[in-house]
Image (cartoon, rainbow, N blue to C red):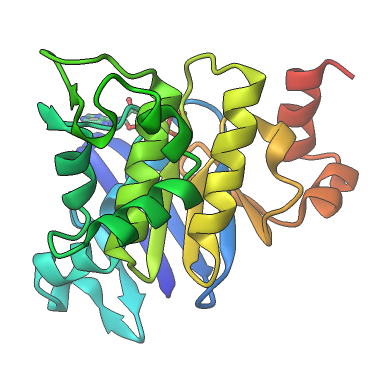
Length: 239
Ligand SMILES: Nc1ncnc2c1ncn2[C@@H]1O[C@H](COP(=O)(O)OP(=O)(O)OP(=O)(O)O)[C@@H](O)[C@H]1O
Ligand SMILES: [Mg+2]
């Protein structure tokens, strides 16, 4: 996949992405970091074709994504949102949204892998418990794990994970991290990361600053470079 001189604005007078170029080999796990407003979510929204580039192109297998039907592009991508949307219905209904054909075995296997089975099994009616506005309210961490199980059932080659910004307790964070590891095996992955403590494991970190790609490398490399990433990291840990 390649982002080729990608430019984008929501309003003509305010450029948001200012010529981002990067090549991502299939199967690579990438973290996207940068200050709030740097353009991280926007870049991945372009990949999902919520918007199209203003200039430049995004290419998959050498082909401009604007030349594929939007439905095809979205089929290739599993998206775990910051605050996942679950609809009113049972846990099972929500999981099946990933693959309507999945039987109970596959459903539970996905929930296990997503570290969601245990809390689902503990709900009043297990997989048949109603969730959403009129049912049991799930925490953000639980919703993200349901969402990960959904994507596992969908089984797309590409995954986008937008880390929750709200506070998540350490135990939940560990479970999400384990679920994420299961999810990303063999898939091209973009993780929008807000907490930098967990980035040692990704293959590569892209740093966006003011709509430009300013750094590209592994955690250790970027830390020793003493640039934007090192600054963000130090600010978070006050070392
Ligand atoms: N729908 C929109 N209409 C107009 N401007 C937008 C819209 N969405 C985002 N922006 C602006 O585009 C810029 C980049 O936003 P974006 O959401 O991509 O940042 P981000 O790096 O994901 O930030 P965060 O870490 O806060 O999620 C910001 O200045 C933001 O205000
Ligand atoms: Mg964002």
